[in-house]
Image (cartoon, rainbow, N blue to C red; front, side, top):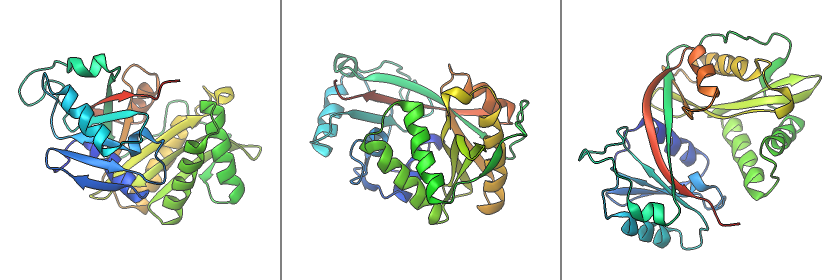
Length: 264
């Protein structure tokens, strides 16, 4: 199966760099991260086309067979058209009955990122490097998501390994030596760089930190990785997408998926 959508093409490339395994089943791709089984989008099926009516139970059965111990369900669709190849936009009723939530996000691209309108000139913007930097990165994730479980710890470890391997850089915005915002930018091969995990401390929002990080990290990626296209993904209903557009990104594609989190 050849992945064509920019969002999932870069998603899969990053998961592989982090240690995921992929298995091509012909009409779908299995992405598996043995070291982080609680990472939904490190353990998912990528369908080769929009699921047609009446196929939902079959896809749920395939997921259960590939991930028998998983408490979640995660299905991506390698399509940029919500109507699918056959022109039918219907979500399989079996997905809805099983509690899966459909999601559509926007994939944005640009060749050369520009400074945000609200450029922050007070914070120190730099790559994470020291043990303290990476511990602060983990702690910032807790402040953003309210969770300090195994998933965040494993995610922090994967970020650092990618960075130290030269395939990514994690940038932070520091004030008084305290990390207040962060993001990653990763070399996804084929001239593409993908942004990851734009996070700002809830107490430090609306200071221009995220936009400044997007700009600085994009400049770094073009020089360090030699890429020609920067890729970022955003919820079209959230404020972040307006920030990315202000930094020079333009809507390129839509990305579609279905997910059910574990109960409880």
